[in-house]
Image (cartoon, rainbow, N blue to C red):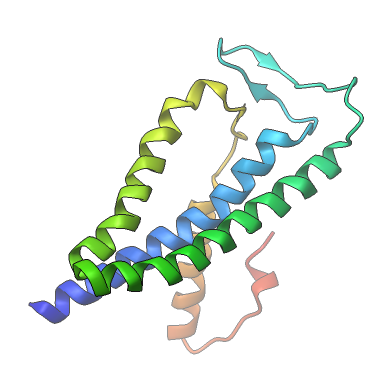
Length: 157
């Protein structure tokens, strides 16, 4: 039972990490860029943000966002690496891991409260990329079990 719970926890961490990391950085870059894509505003009307009076180009703002974004990630990593062992030494494992958990819960509470301030892109029409990914993986596995070794380009059309 313990082994199953351990691997279930690891699987959930892998899925969560793999699902959130690319989404967070892309979502953050969307908030500072002036791409030509349709943006769904708070009142559900289509509007494209335009900062024509701004001295900074969209590329510069995105570059600045990523600089701050990764700086904050690294500061959080260093702070966690330093603080969690100190808290563990003084108060035990439970409180040591409760600290980052509380910060995570704070962030998860704050994120939806600011939802109305975010830029929301209109989703593209057509099949979504996740279903295409699963379809291609299924086709490749089927061909693999049949003993064929096709190239990826034979699936993409």
